[in-house]
Length: 246
Length: 261
Ligand SMILES: Nc1ncnc2c1ncn2[C@@H]1O[C@H](COP(=O)(O)OP(=O)(O)OP(=O)(O)O)[C@@H](O)[C@H]1O
Ligand SMILES: [Mg+2]
Image 1 (tube, rainbow over the protein chains, first blue to last red):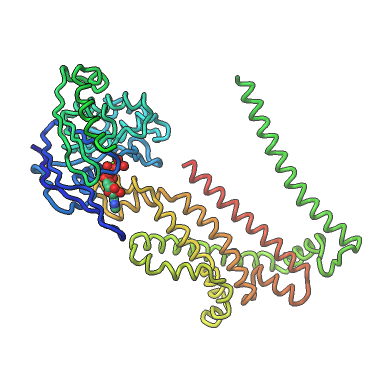
Image 2 (image 1 turned 180 degrees about the vertical axis):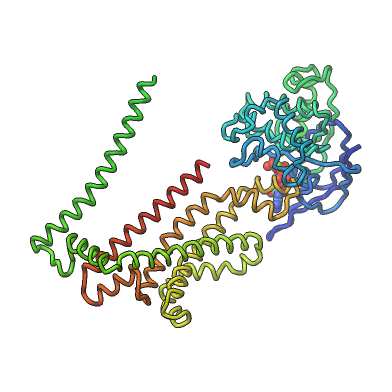
C-alpha cells in the first residue's frame, strides 16, 4: 500500500461561512492501482487531490504515505508555460527541485522520444495540438519520478474526439511507466474505462457514496474497455448513484 | 496560389506607403500653411512665430554652442529619471507582491498619491531639494513611480493561478515562483508600464525645468515666454516633440526585439 487516508475532513472558511467540503473520506491506494473519483460538480473532488498533493491543508483526519512516496500533479488545463519550449516545460519541475542532472534530463529525453514529442522539443506549446500538450504536461509530471500521479480532470479542456484518443495515450503511458494514479473526472464512461476502482462521491459535503472494483471481461485500453460486456452494468450503477436527488 | 499571396503582400505594402505619405503630407501642409499665414500677416508672427523663425532660432542656438547643451541637459534628466523610475517602480511592485500584508497596508496611500496632482508638490520639492537638477529628477520620479508601481503590481497580482499552483506542486518557494512565472508572465505588462513611465517622465522633467532650471528645453520655453520670444518657445516645443518621438521609437524597437526573442 502506498497511501492510506483515514477520516479525512476539510472545511473551507471564508468571511461568510464555513464550507464543509469533505467529510469522513477513507481510501487506500495500492501500487499500480488506477483509481478514479467521480461526483457531482463542486462536491470536493479537487480538494481531495489538493490535500494528497500538499497544496491544501486538511482540517482533520490522516493522510499517511508509505516511506518516500512522491506524488506528481496534473491539472485540468495543461498549465504549460507559454514562454518556455516543450523541453524547458518538461524539465521545469526538475530545475525547481535542483535535480536537473544528466540522468534525469536523459530520462526526460527518453520519455519525449517514446511518446512522440522529441521532434517538438524546441517548439512552443501553442504550436502543439491539445493532445500533444497534455502528453507534454504528463511528461513534465513524470520527470520527477513520482510514485503516485494525481490527475484533476486532465481531459476536460479537450474536444470529444481528442479526449478519447488522449485518454488512451495517457492510460498507456501511466501503465508503461508503472505508475499509480488517482484521477478525478466528470465522465462516467471515462471513470469506468480507465479505473481499477471507481470512487463515487456524494454531493457536498462529500462522503464516499459507493466504491466499485471494476472487473471487466478483458482489461484493455480505455476506448476498448467501453465496449466490454460488463461496462454497461457499472455505468448504470454509477449513473443511479449520481442521479439520486434530481 | 503564390501569385495571390504576392498580390496580397503588395497590397499591404502599398497601403503602408500610402499611410506614410499622408502622414508626411499633414506635417508638411502644417508647416507650409503656418509659414504662409505669417508671411501674409494673417496671423501675428510675433505671437505665433513662423517656421523660418524657428529655423533661424535653431541655427542661432547652434552657433552660440547652446543647442546641444540644452538638448543634452533635458535628455540626461529624462534618462536618469526614466531608468531610476522604472527600476524603483518594478522593485517596489515586486516587494508588494512578496508581501501581501504590506500591499494591503499601503493600498489607500498608493491610491491617494496616484490621484494627487503631483505638480502641486513642486514648490515644496524645490524647498527641500533646492533649485537644481535634483528637484527636477525628484519631480519626474514622483510623477512616474506611483503609476508604474500600480500598473506592474496589478499585473503581478493577476498572474495565472494555475501556473502558480503548478509551481507549488513542485514545492517551489516564493522567489522561484516569482522568477519562473510571475516575472515572465508579466513581460508585456512591464513593457507597457515602462512606455507610460517614459511619457510621465517627460511631463515631470519639463514641469521641473519650468519651475527651476537654468538650462534645458523646459528652460528655453520658460525663458522664451518671459522675454516674449515666441520663436524660442516654439523651438523648445518642437525640439521636445522630436526628442519624445526618438525615445518612443527606441522603446518600440526594444519591445519588438523582446517579442521576437
Ligand atoms: N480555496 C477555497 N476557499 C473556499 N472554498 C473553496 C475553496 N476551494 C474550494 N472551495 C469550495 O469547496 C467545494 C469543493 O470544491 P472542489 O474544487 O474540491 O470541488 P470539485 O468537486 O473539484 O468541483 P468541480 O467539479 O467544479 O471541479 C466547493 O463548493 C468550493 O466552492
Ligand atoms: Mg475540481
